[in-house]
Length: 125
Image 1 (cartoon, one colour):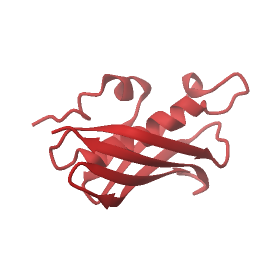
Image 2 (cartoon, helix red, strand yellow):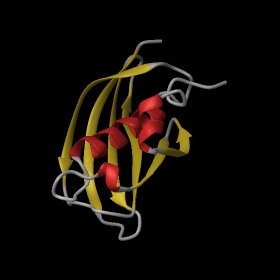
Image 3 (tube, helix red, strand yellow):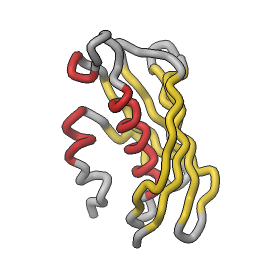
C-alpha cells in the first residue's frame, strides 16, 4: 500500500528518490541538476531542506503512521554544485506522538558533509 511519503508530488518533482525506508533509518538521494542551483551556482538551501525533511518523513512514516514536522533546524556545512546528495535520517528518540530525528546530507562522490537537519515530528495518526 502506498503511504503519504510515496505520494509526495513535490519531492518527486525535484527528483528525490527513496533508497531505504524503515523505522530505524531512511536514505534518500537526489541527483543534482541546474534547476537545484541558486544564482551563485550552488545548491539552493531550500533544496537541501526539502531533501532532509523528506528523509525525516520517510523514516517517521515507515511504520504506516502519518506524521508532520513540528520543528526543524538546518545547519549548512558545505556547499555543493553537482553530483548526488544523500540524506540519511535516524531517530534520536521515538515517542508515542512526538519524536526527534537527525538527518545528515552528504555528497555521495566526496563523502563530504553538506548539511545537518534536526527535527521534531508529531504523529497525527
